[in-house]
Length: 352
Image (cartoon, helix red, strand yellow):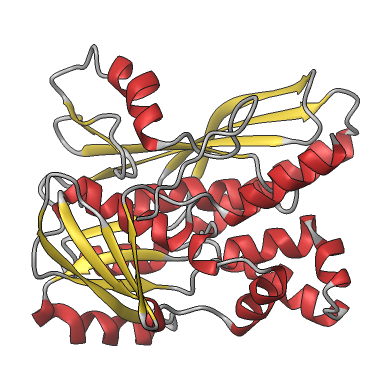
């Protein structure tokens, strides 16, 4: 049995373990809600849903804390992905930029340019935010909140996956982590013998962090019952969260998971698992078996790699992910520690 989410001495790195999150944060956050709130704070659900009468507002907020590279565009992609996998087109965003004290204005300007360029590419309007120089931080932190309005009855929830659904992976996993490692842990790759050209190729994967186009296409054709984007904890974490949100066990065949060659080589050299690494640019979707061919055909037309990697099993009071990896079987009852968070933790300890 694999039980992730270990707490570290003196605190934690990355997302809180889910049971701690539920006890310390979510149980308190649910003490008050409006009748118009269709979906509030919940593990595995990507965006809040609020009934505005003429539409359902999907809203999600995310910080970028474990990357120093292209934080502006990545922040836009990460937050907008969570709205898009609701089947809702991202329309507006609020951006908070926290800069280390003493930062150059040119550094702030570059981040804002990156934010605005990516937002315009995705058709998202920047409607507000906050910018400051913050004491006590060593690198810029960008927090983006994205909102969009969808049609009532057409909004998708992670927990809507049901027994017999196939599990579809859209986009190669761990591309975000690969790009972060190529930029923020470049020294490890040089020490591992990788060339500058190879590291540059890995770095460019950050340009594929958005899944909005593909998620919306599947939703608009009614081809999926559930969608959930891959973020911290990687594909394994995302599938476990779908299992927990839906109340069903899920089985995944690791050999069917799509991983780019550059990612495979980098993770192999570092002794890391790409299935446990943050993966913006990829999402999972549940769909009925009779929708498989149409969904795969659509995604092929859109030019994105996709693969059926598993199946939603029967309901369970304690949902788990069963990962078939070669001749072995791994069972997860919580998300694993993210590989990028592990690298940051190891670096902090080495500098401490």
